[in-house]
Length: 283
Picture (cartoon, rainbow, N blue to C red):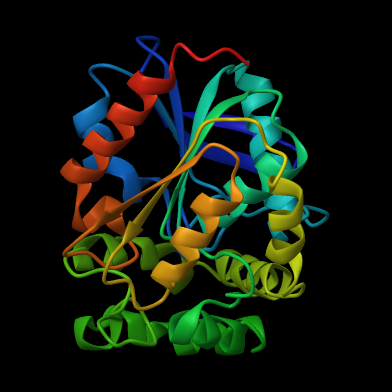
């Protein structure tokens, strides 16, 4: 499916009308298929909506005036929810998608019923770890040179390095190879990616400021963290759960940051239990 928003055309997946609504957000240089294994376990009981945000693996170039910073991405998510008229949404984010969830919580919760943050940037972890610092540096290249640099991602051994996806996922190399195709083959996506990386990492205090505002968010919140995460510190998961007034922490073993790829069934069960337990709680 597609929708026209202020930033341009967004692709999204929607399993239909049955059950409570769960909206899933992905990270930088990723797209909606991050969530495919998890959604497969949830779609029979919930309406699962997964947009591909303009974060570097998108297929439609953004408009020249689009705000692709983290706050701009959060406003785009709010616009997406408005246009689809989704209410009482469980907003779920992983990696940079979790950072965007935090910014939505800090600014506009009108359509949000509960939130799930899974192994994501938080506080001062921006850019996150070795992987994020590498992305931030490559984003300083001109688009053409950025495209040349990214050609290395065609090779699995290079994708598995810690500076690429090696510390983000244990088992998801096929997905990461698929996410690279637009930026490897399309100059307009290379231009977008450079612009996005520069904008996302321009304000390194943005999540610290969001954390201050989230202290008053009166919504059920679940924090799910990979116990072995090497990019998003597990201590940040505990800190987020303590920060949110109704926060709860669950840690999952045998996974890196991308829990939806490494432990999709376990993650789906944790999300389902949380939604079912809090679905009766009024706003």
